[in-house]
Length: 186
View 1 (cartoon, one colour):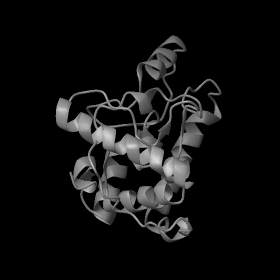
View 2 (cartoon, rainbow, N blue to C red; view 1 turned 90 degrees about the vertical axis):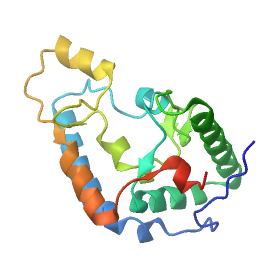
View 3 (tube, rainbow, N blue to C red; view 1 turned 60 degrees about the vertical axis):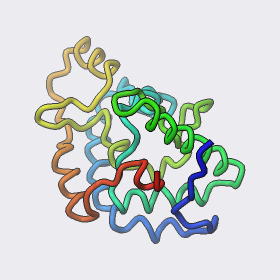
């Protein structure tokens, strides 16, 4: 097992509101688009319990400095036994990245696999918030389940969110993304 120094704060009583302000505006923009899509589509599959994307990441997370700060604070606020489990998952993912390199399917280390829910849901990265609701010009950012549902229901009036604009704003506000293995000093 690889020893990975935890770069976040070790205090479990971290005030999450101290980390949120830089990202709050983007979170609100994303949530507005998500709610607009869901408003007329109660069948939309992206919701608690659907963890398909969390179990099939194309790569380990690359997050902006502000997102890493928020994720670290959320992990530090978890109960100690859960922190230890998350740390083990981080270490296992670091090993996977080294052994298998890019291109292998990744399970998010923050996912509670038994519950099918994110352990740090309120602090999850913007990529997690936008997936399934936002697209780029040359890449759909949703799973086969959404594509099948949209096609079967002949949904043509979906106004997808602009993932490129969100990523641009995030990069401008917080800096370029930091790879998972770099964040955890591997």
